Image (cartoon, rainbow, N blue to C red):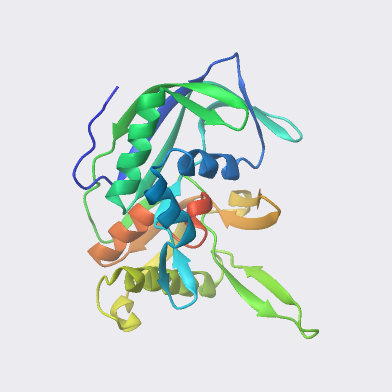
Length: 256
């Protein structure tokens, strides 16, 4: 089991196995993984991350994301049954978040997902991918981006964009730029991203994912995409996630 974390960790891979014959989770299990993360952070780190994040305007960003669980599984009507070994990924721009999370998991040697326990097998720090422009990425968790609209009767409505719409790319760029400004990264003019592209390469109707985070229905998209971004913005998207709701388990990608 790897116990060292690089000075600037970006991403970790966690391998684990159910203590019983199988791990049974609700189909929409993102909140359980998010709970696992927050419950395995030092108090000051967890409190600052959960309650504050980093703000730009009215938006707050927590700058971490995580993948789906990967391994053998059987899908039922309301649950998903995993049999080990299993794997998941987590990334963050915050070194102290990853260090704290890894430390707590290694001390416990176990992973608690809801009422069920799993044995921790290993934790590996992933190597930073080489930058290229353009570069293709594959989703490890769905990408979601949305706008909140006001209907004629005054009620708020959430509109989720599809990669087939031009506004999908525009909204993802706007989200990425707001993240950069919250960090003080790059020029403060969004025109800096002029000429950049994020386009679907292998994305179809089958890649639509309709998920629930607690009581909120969220639409996201999996698939393969091409990113044509300045280097610092590529690594920001890679470390913190593409699109919205990253800390709820959306927008994690890997280079293919």
